[in-house]
Length: 487
Image 1 (cartoon, rainbow, N blue to C red):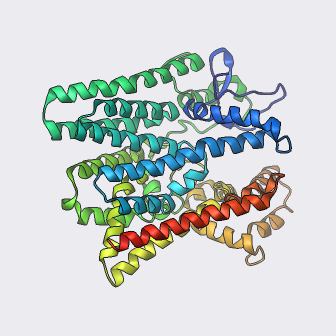
Image 2: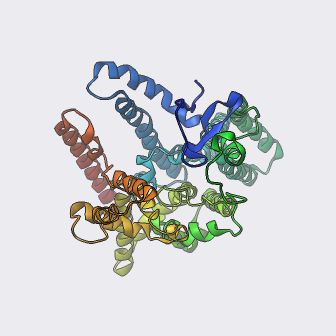
Image 3: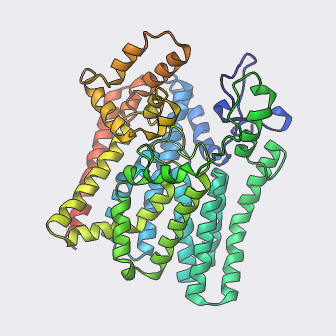
């Protein structure tokens, strides 16, 4: 089976057009429209989980496969991303202790933490883009052609995971060429390293085109393009409510305002470190190394391109995802070299400046912690109780705070979900009933290890192991804090 293929039962009847992100390819075979890269990454762990399930039959096969993919694929990839962050900071000549501490703050103080728990493609693409930048710098600084090849491979794999990564390919390659020109000002070197980089990138890029040809009948037809085309005219969706004309294109670039300032998705609200880091970046711009300056210009362009490309799309917000899903990867790239600047400024400041930066860092960690306690889709599901024009005007962070407090004491307010469901369930409405079920389902704790309470095993040992690991992580963070503050 060429993933991600869908198996449909003979009596399956869709309720809305395009549900399950389903497209019909060659021979009318149904697929999920996402690229195959993430599925390929998960396959080894999924196979291992399937085999090991035979020895642990008390746990459902699907649950065991999910556990296997989580611990053998997603957690190692997230750890690798933090290590890649540390590696790139060291290339930027940030001292070891500050780089290590900054990497931890980057992990727990940005939306990277949320997407480390949710199996979207964001952090996998982020890892590959960071490696792409790092390899470009090592190839340029140390004249190591192998790293140019590796950088191309990383960006080619990013395309296999998400085709919109072409924007990352554009900005990383532009960074690489510009830095080579700055460093050597020699066309032959630029041409030589560019060809080596393409030698890594093109095979995986062409593999992606081949897979799309096999699935959709054209090397230039992506799943998303086919999905938009088919929701209007494919017989499978006939007799279902029509989408608005010209959907998903909007008449106004709402996504620009939405990504920057909307209370539901603003990159400044859900990544509170971004604004102070940008301010310090401007203040200390002249002190930065040339490679850091060029990197920051590159990733700011990256963010601008992502905002521009999604600004006219109806789903600019990333649907049910926490924060602005299509823009947070660019934000993480911007924060990467600026968090050390923020931390160093904090330790060198006294009085109010020191206090305000500590407060911002603390609030950032609290906000990211709140984002991973309950299901990411909870506030989005609550939004279906509102008029469509208000769904992305709600302050979702405020809703999350209320929902977490209500989880502790559901009688504290009439705004609590259990109270709302009790009142609204009296209304006889099929659509409302489905929405209430969705809200009730998402109103659950998903924070590791509490989400494993449904598995039939000795949960006490799960909590013991988790607690030991948490205490170890906290103690190491405190040690790094002290070591950085003494430098």
